[in-house]
Amino acid sequence: MELTPVVLFMKGTPEEPMDGYQDRALTLLNESKIRFSTFDVMSDSDVREILKEQSRWSSFPQLYVNRKFLGGLAFIEDFVARGKVNSYIPTTEVDLPIRDKIFKLMNARNNSCSKFI
Image (cartoon, rainbow, N blue to C red; front, side):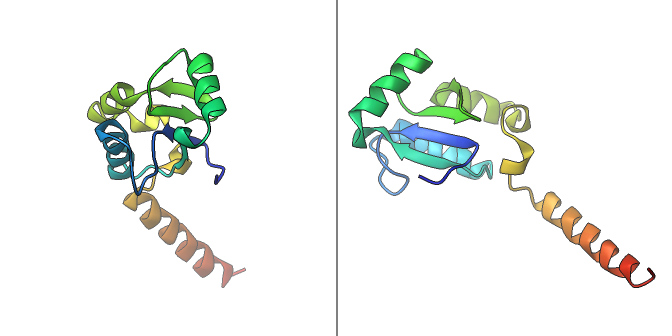
């Protein structure tokens, strides 16, 4: 599993989610341009049971950010619908087109400034 600050523990894989709940969570995170990794809890019953205990949440998907449980599908739907992605997800993990433009502009400025030094 790729280590990222945002992890979706789900039933199935992104290519083959086991039900509509998993698929909906994937869709919302992808549409919000959030970088995340996934773990198929059906592949390891120990991990599945430990997560249920630790989170006190019996269903999947479960969203974790920086190793902290945030919630399930309803939570994801809510923060996306209210436009609160940046309140819960580190900005480094959200792919924003404007961010790319700003970085390109900053790099162009730094390159032109270095000519004068």
